Image (cartoon, rainbow, N blue to C red; front, side, top):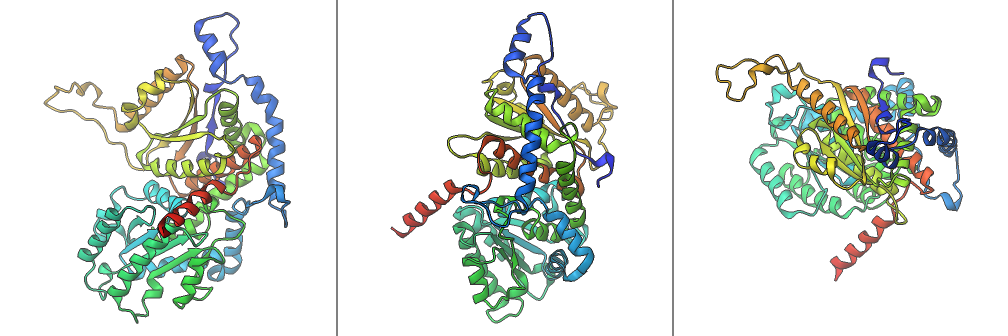
Length: 485
């Protein structure tokens, strides 16, 4: 279990309608736009029953037709991987992932991650949240052996992939020098994602020219991650990969819920992150989800509060306000999880990621006085990862900041958070907070598992299957038909 000072909490009291007997214009606005505490209390037992249903779904060997697809394998996966690793060490699934990451790190100084949606967003969220902001620009010594990381295969933009090819052509000249070698991870659960497979074909061709078509190194510097069958799996076998060489995503885990499979763990290990702590955080959140009552259960709280905001309070736009630039890609990952899980049958909330304080200068006016169709979930960090940078004194004080010389950047962030929260509260704009004590592998594991679990619970509350993405398959089919015409 996580230490108490590393436990993530969800604080939603600000969006509850306080009991005020006398009428005021503000009281009327609160009654219209905030949640009555009695409604939360009335549904808390129901959401506990939904939790029992979701817990029971993990044990189903065969799902009835009306529940298909059913892909709850992600729920127990973190603890399962940790337990297996303790028993089997390097022979375990986690041990194999860690060892493969170590070999790739030893071989190359640049790794291209090819994937789209749930195949690349977990890695990008971890890279930006826990890595140095300018990691790729740091000299090798400062990176402590961690390769430079790039992301492609997530679009069909001719110019961006050409830019990457030009970078590799200029920076990677001699394959005998580790600092000039590069490799790639190609990820597609279905094995048929067009953008990823197209990028894989182009990049593999470049790698073949670089190392030589008969080089034994090709199999070591190209790592496929896919399902247990499909086009990418078959393609890998045609290149001589054995089933042991291909890292597979379990059949009972959907792509957008695959964060704690090799999809997220292999890139994390290559980045030098503590993947065990990442899994421990996720396992701790799963235990809280399964064991804690509603009053201490951030998964159930978040799911119920945001469900009521979208379904009953007329707030279908869900703003995730990230109070750290490092969390922007985490927001985009959650956008994907929520949209693809619950955007069905003409329903579902619309996610919107913001970075504060940056986006207060673009959307702050709209949030304060625009349409009342949104709820703001602030994601806050109690403690920055680095020592606070102080304002300090200057001889030139035309900016009038000497009066704030003892204040730091965290002080500015904290004041802005308090100010915006107070401003929203004064105008009955619903706001809640996911509070993160410190940003590390353990808390990232907690947060990502919390949001995936909450999405499943919210889907069950809505009566919508949170698994599967039938709408995505429609556009994919038409795209392939258009290419053939």
